[in-house]
Length: 75
Image 1 (spheres, rainbow, N blue to C red):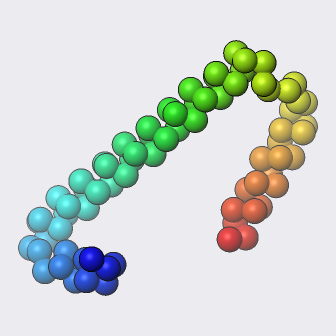
Image 2: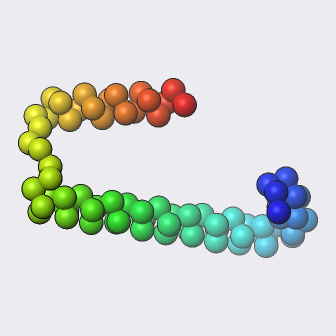
Image 3: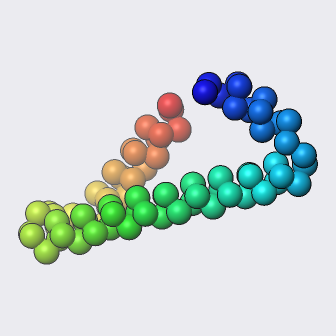
């Protein structure tokens, strides 16, 4: 099912059902993202315990964060 067809089908639902569907999708999306973040955190902790992380200055970390933020906003 493509996006346009799905959207058209959803828009045929009564208003209250659309609201319920939107809430379900938002909550499921939040749960998926929360699980992704938890997985990334577990991997980072494992890397830390394995000694795979190099010490970095706060200045370097902030510069890398700013660079990655700029890369995301350019997309």
